[in-house]
Length: 534
Image (cartoon, rainbow, N blue to C red; front, side, top):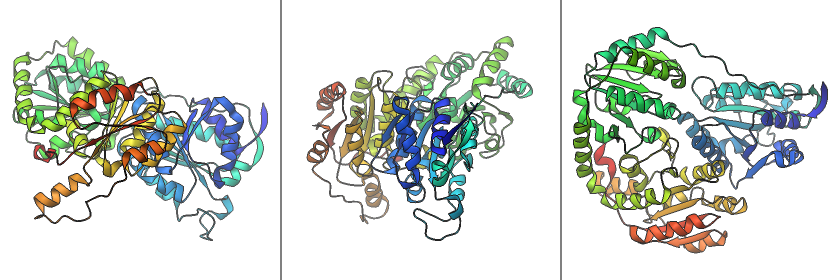
């Protein structure tokens, strides 16, 4: 059956066919017909409109990081794309399933540099550099297929952002289109049987293996834990790998905690991540490297693996486990050794007592399933190496991109995606003001995020380096802040102040009972830097 639709209606139908019915974005002239279609779709769609395109991008990032499911960001072309570019780059670095849907100037004006509103040179080139898949819709009839192609790319191989560009004249064009939008199908994955056999042979002779996990292992928590127990191998999750193995498990290690074990490690198993911190920072040596990754280009990037398996962990880890069990592979019990490792780390990390005290209160308030979003601030840095994490997708980090200010809007998106879960953002006064106006978005859309704002009136980490490493050359790091109570309450959000860990606990209880957003300000001075543990 053929029906007449605008390009905007066709794009919306394609999104709906794939269950992509929450959209973070901003309307604008190039997207008018898309938002007309969202309006006509009624309750089928929830549009979270933000106060800045960067906020829209980070909220979509938070939604996909918290769930593992694709999420949609929509912006106008040119300045809208550039404003959201930091979020798109962060999503690329985090292997996030972000569907970046952008407008474009009319087709006949693309690339002519005539000063058309919101035109930038080579927008497709910019988008291709930050996406695994780029395409442009040139007619309403192809919108459904191109949405399906983008979703298929999101769910195939390494899960990085995809971009679909729709010119404004295509969004407005009414034309005959197929009656039903195509739906992306998932391709069956072939198991690398030879790679599995090689891995089993190596692991059967391993004396002291160590497992490193990252984002690609978020959905195989049970299998990673089973592999660790079978091999009696410590598991290291840093930043994007926290919570894949519960921190309470004897074999679970913080990154610096595991470093003393490196000298005796004979086999490194990298699952869904690079293990670059150890391989580049601690030294490769004579260790055997086994790598399982959905992206074959990763294999030789951090030292050529002895066993390289290209494929999804969801497919390959169960097969590896079965093969190891069939061969009777089992490592010697390391309970006592790991007890000593954990005790030594508690003693070494005790210098971070101020951060640990606050993070302990936060951990208790969140419970096992609450979501914690870190930030480029001393409390955030410390959380990566001292805060216990108990479930996958409950510790969200900026990864290697290190995007200051990402945390608050990313946490808002996580809360939208997981409305019944406690979500908490930690931030500093510097990073918070990057996107603090999204408090308006949180109030308008009823997003009950709790934000703990550590205020020292500095870009504190940089100022510490200026004082400690550069002879006291303090420049451009002192900050003048607003009255945060007046600022926060002016939006209609909740505000509290806590001057100690003991005061933070009841403030968090009250904040999580509030259905709307709450900011808890914590005044602090300098904190001990975590750089000593690099």
